[in-house]
Length: 528
Image (cartoon, rainbow, N blue to C red; front, side, top):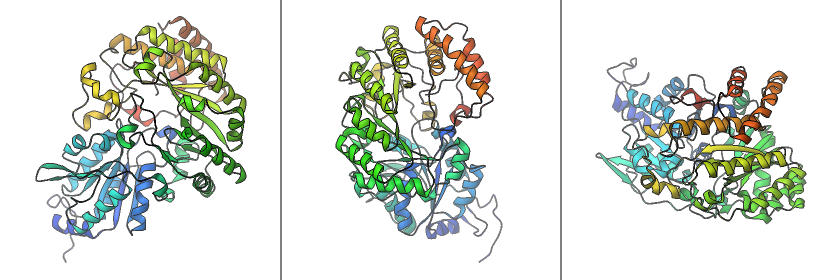
């Protein structure tokens, strides 16, 4: 066999093969899968859970896995282009929003090198918009929903060169047509293999965000159907979970094996089964676990936790409970399908959490359809009341963004919203940038400035290390008082405090990677 250098005449040629046909044959013989994870928020980076999940079946079947995370990989584009030369395919996991930008750039670069090289997309965005995603000329396959079985079967077909028609849960192209295979039924989480955490470079993630932490999934789904939530679009409203013993053994081993100080349990609603949560807490105490952990749950189930429950969870290492309060307006909550939410129970549970030493965190969605200035004022008043009455409570805010798969997404035309029509256009679809027919121009700017003042009025604890020095802390603490006055009186003209805060932040390397692409006329920083 003749060996020659890669040339423009043979765009798929590697340093070892001389033609696209030889390269394609080599790819089919390869057992190497290259995964790419686009950057989302580098200041709080850790291993991509979805990729670790689908990697285990591949490794057990004799495939080799290379994981490239752009957040921690210098010159990641060049690295990908080198790795794919002897790989079977490139797989990318992503959610709707800024991650799409790097996805498109990498996919186009790989196709420029070799148009026939297979590129597979998986994750939330391809699962919720399979047809539109597959229409992109640089995407060959998509995996919908749970990918552990579907991707392994697809990879085997790529390896053998056989047609993938009978692989459930995927989409592909043939003769210019999009083909969607039959749906794959969701498997209970307890049947799924453990995630391949050993693929993660926790040292690199620690260097990036200053803390060793990981994500962990112990349950899937949520029995509620909030209008803005995409969960039902992938998992329906069925909740299934790991047994307590598995949670305890896996997380304790994970924390000790990789010296993790914190685990973020990314379940949509961890507390659906309260007895399960109690057994988990008891097990962690018995195992003398050393790590801290955070959970997410709806406010109504958090309200069911007794003081004794919370003290037990605290002894087990629980440090934070995140709750989707979403609005302080009963009118807006009803539109969100959350009229079951009780504000008095929120106050009571916040008090109990703080007494137990657990930080209560609340998420807020501004500008949901039906929210006007009066309803927004109700929400701000609610936030101010909680933070003053319960020092240590914190809020994180977003601007309403109708994501595919959510109940409200079906009403976008009625609401006057034009969703993107191509994969690339979804890159700027993100709460930080969202402009709506009822929230544009000065009204949008005003809300962004309001959100910025809420950020500096009361302390919030990020996942990553707090790199602020003592002087920076003092300056930002001093700005909290005028920020609270502005929020109380609805006065946001000449926002000098935001200018000072931004100048201070320029000396702290903590900005999320997605800030590299800012939209025109966006006011002061608006983290979600």
